[in-house]
Structure formats: C-alpha cells, structure tokens
Length: 205
Ligand code: GRF
Image 1 (tube, rainbow, N blue to C red):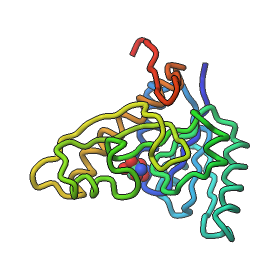
Image 2: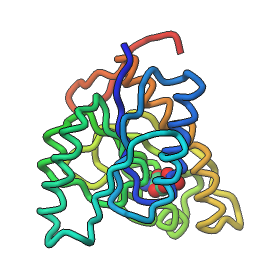
Image 3: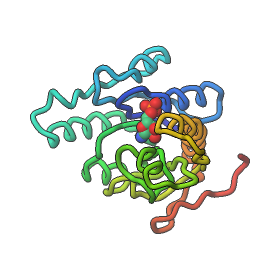
C-alpha cells in the first residue's frame, strides 16, 4: 500500500531531492505530501515547488519562543498525518513532544557513523579525531541528539589530504543512497523494532 511521507529540511535539500528522484523512479512506494521547513530561504523550497510538493514554512525567527515554534510544528505535522516523517538536513533539535507523537515514524540522516560524532559538524569532528573511515547513519529519532535506533549505515574512507569539503562530498553521495533505501524499507513494512534494535525483515530488495 502506498505510504504518505513528509520531509523536513532547513537548507540545500539534496537529500530531499534524492528522495523525490527515488520516488520518481518508482523505487519508493510513497507519495511525498509535504516539505516542512523552519527556514524561508531554504533551497529545498524551490525543489519542492519544482516537484509539485506542498511547502509548509514555519519560520523559527517569527516565534516568541522555542516552545511556541514546536507547538506550531507539532500541529502542522499532525495535520499532515503522514506515515513517515523524515529529517533530511533539518538543523534543529526535535522536542520530546514531537518525538513521542511520532515514535518510530520519524527518521534522521546523520553524516557520521553513529554513535561516533553526533551533533553539528560531524565531518569536521571525524577529521579532527583522525578516523580512517566515516560514513552516514539513518536512524529513528529518539529524545537524544542523534542517539536513536540505527536503521542503515554506509562507510566511506577518509583519505590523506581530505578536508571538510571533500569528506562531506564523499559522505553525501552515500547519504543519497542510504536515505531512500531506508525509506523504502519502512514503506515496504520491513522495519521491526525489537527493544532499541531495528530488525530488517527479509524481502525482495
Ligand atoms: C547532510 O549532510 C545531512 O546528513 C545533515 O545535513 C546535511 C544536509 O544536506 N544532517 P542537504 O540539505 O540534504 O543537502
């Protein structure tokens, strides 16, 4: 059965584009029923408009407090009543109210192999630490920062001479593969929670 998905993005939206393209190629049995952004100048908005996806701008700076912003965000997400909410470069911490409203129905993509290097500037953290491999992680969202159950991960090498830009670009290529794959698994009902572990049920792909 066709699922409804909603994407949250704060900026460039290349992961959002990867999702749009995968749906277009028939690789994800879903309809994207909205892009939600906290940033009125996010390039993701242009991508949504090109793809005919409704845009919901909740301008963080126009709210008196984080609580007021979160209340409105929760209302919008709830009204959209999607099966799955995807944080794809959404640059804010999601409050506990939203996490519990959409438990195991909200996923995030992070540009490091969690639990290493959570939070901001993950690629720079990895370079500063001196690891030989890094990558990306798609995980369900829980109350912590980048701490939820892991769905999929992919590795890339860290090469001599890498800087933040070159490593980020190598990781981003994997993000664009991993995130649509994880969404597909969800939409095919192939993700099962066992405690805090995600079991991938067998299937055709
Ligand atoms: C990605 O690296 C994602 O992992 C991180 O923020 C970046 C967003 O890129 N959370 P984009 O907006 O999808 O192009």
